Image (cartoon, rainbow, N blue to C red):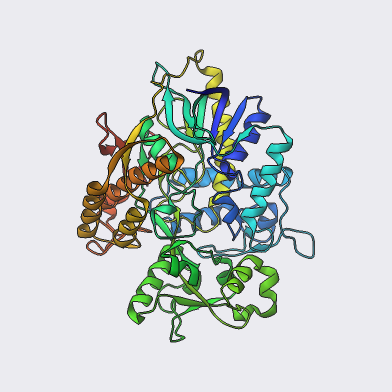
Length: 537
């Protein structure tokens, strides 16, 4: 090891969950160290467009309620949400939102000075607050970056965590990290919070940036924690079909926010026929899994590689209300004010993740998780739009408070143990892995395709030492892909984001429950029944 550092709480990730937790932990008097493998502003948070779904007093005054928000979330989650977790997180939303605004985040306001609100698919009320029109994530990231800087919270950019370290009691007590020059070092900490975001880079077409490589899932599995419900990958219905993306064979696609449909835009196919008419009572405002599946079916039926989102009803107001979408369209030579936007589906959000309580605790002492990487029971089989930033805010505050409580009760910390050698792990070439996952583990799957995917990845994997960030990312993608495929094979039904051609029906008798996995001592994925997973009523 060429360098060492020490903290009470090590936070891995610099998005909404990571930086919110850092601010709260600092406020509680803990020594905090944040690490991120890229620049602090690079991650999923900055790309979030729609907004934050929250019921504050203003929404209550307009006739909304937390109870209605809970109902919408449960309905979107297709029977797999934990009602207790849903109510707890959504009830805390107003407080988390207040803290975010106190940290400096500025949101769009109406003429009377109240926060502007919009509605997205699956919501029964206008409760989604937004910033910069459709640049909510960018504003949240900006505010949190400035707040952590002004509070003097140390953030190590360009530092990649390759392994979590344990104390002699089995608790997580730090991490093995590669710095910006690729030199290995150790960070000793009494607690580690994973806030590493999503897994979108498993697929050729995704709304996620290049850093979304499933690092937290892999780190947690190797540390002894369970993951659950990884088969539920939410594909966003409307990502911009860009000519550059098609030419390059995929990659990150610009998101076309669901809020456009909330304000009147409709989906049509290449022949001008409405895509969602007759598919769902809410039509274009149906839950995302329903809309994404309908789009894929319509593209297959018409032989087209996209459908179109017709937002021309917004007219001249579109550039001001949705500047990010407008700019992305104009960059592709499209004028959304007067012509429909070509859109397609893209991997967007992981509804599953590391099994945690609603306080961020995992089953491994000293290890916590928050944000997209965590599976709390909030999202179930399909996340309700704009509940993600809200969960990151709420869980981050709760996790920081849980760490403080646990450290007060914990015995004196012991030094984390490590061999000093960089670990090795199976690695599959990233382009090959994306092609396999896109072909066999997309919106619709079946047993034959899933088996073929597992076989191809197994044949292509090579064990390599994790000496670089790229290799560590590829190893994380490989393990995460294996876990996702194993989960998808196991769940022999169709529910929410998980759709099986060979099992098209929902099976409440056998599968109205979580689907958890962990690694055994030999490194094989096996079924798990962690205590944090409640049975779904």
